[in-house]
Image (tube, each protein chain N blue to C red):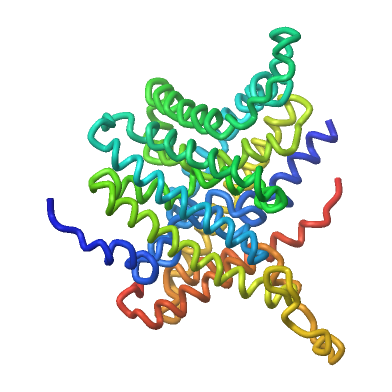
Length: 207
Length: 205
């Protein structure tokens, strides 16, 4: 088996091979939770945990899973991890779990998790798989937090629920951008992030 | 009857799977390069939603909900299996997709060659699982309502993907800044379509 650069495995998905902006995986659940920074952070953390742990488990099982039924086995492993995360959130952070509602459950069908398992964990040893899962989770979380930062700052003038834009600005006629709270703005912001990233990394541009 | 129509229209336009909840985005962006394939995937989504959602509704009602096991007898009435719902729903969806694929292949080869590649993809489409999870959250009163909701949201998804595919076919002739080409402009287009769909928001039927 060829040597895998562990550091590269962990860091590559964060910028250069970012799962959202480069590979277009896992958009589904990522955008709806970015109205507030708090929800986005919890979601980022949950996805990182699920991706890392299910990559690890599948990688440990990789020699015993029959190829024909691997999708079902993977789904069961992922679903188990998601149930654990969901139960923990319900027990210790009930209000956040309420705002994230179905999106925690939807981590099961999040393409990042399945994609990394299929593409990496099935053919690699447990440690690189764990790191790959962690790296992809961080890459996903980074985009989520950037989008949520702008949406909450411009949309409600707060961060983590604390007022950032001072009251005196509002007295001078500053107004919150109501459009930022609506779902479509997440897509447009993400489009802009991709724009910036591709302007810097020219090799990613499509012809 | 009026309730059903209202639910149907609402799930198409107001609670559109794509524009209001971003469900099924991955395949939405990946398979919307031309109208024909987009149409195939859209039809497959409607079909699978329509089959899986009522089944999951019945499972939720008679197996998973707190107190759902009351039909077995008094002492089962206090059992709450709702923590199992993710795993049950995804197992049902994966199994149904497999069965549907086999049945369609056997009895309707023409349809199979159209849907063929999309059917297995659908098992991991968030819109399908999302439909079941929203159904659980909304407490529909009977199977009819669940099926209406499934039909409506599937139809909304189909509408969204066909519309995006049509726009993307035209987009390939326009001059877009190089870094924005492909993925970037698609995201912005979907955002603008989403804003257009927001005009349906206040509709009461």
